[in-house]
Length: 112
Length: 115
Image (cartoon, rainbow over all chains, first blue to last red; front, side, top):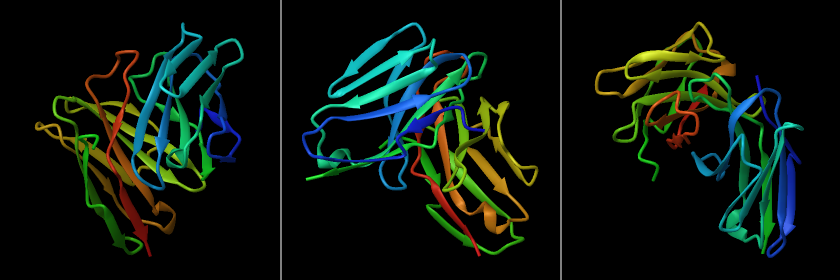
């Protein structure tokens, strides 16, 4: 079963614009992570935010976490064509053994 | 390159057959995870092993089984294959389970096509 649900399912923007993707989840978590997947390739870890953190930055990425609303957002600033990919949120539930539950992803297309 | 190796990259087989997917984790990682990715179900967690022992089970069918060997590589066995088993199967690894804030390293996947 899916834990996270991303929104929107697809997003198309111009190079230089910002892209915002949202994720909602259902249970208590230890952390929330964002991964990127380039057309059917393996997933690559982008950023992890712990349940006691509210915001985290990494380069052009900004992640927020609201545990009261069970939601997170990923902001990619000044997007590039190379950012075109699918983005997934994944949650590590409290009591889990480290396995992550993934949402269905947001497909981002950045047009040059 | 994540350091996680999966073979084969592509597999084409017929319904009713049995296949084995192989995964070598990153050097030093003790935990291996298997995921199935399909268009309709998304990324589904199947099963997790740590140092040879099963640690967690997800949406894994009874026709599927896995194991982790003493050298830490893992195999996912899929039997009595059905058309609906066609999917991309990923292996991921991490240093140890239970640590609350670990990221996973994914292999490039095995694309299984059941005809």
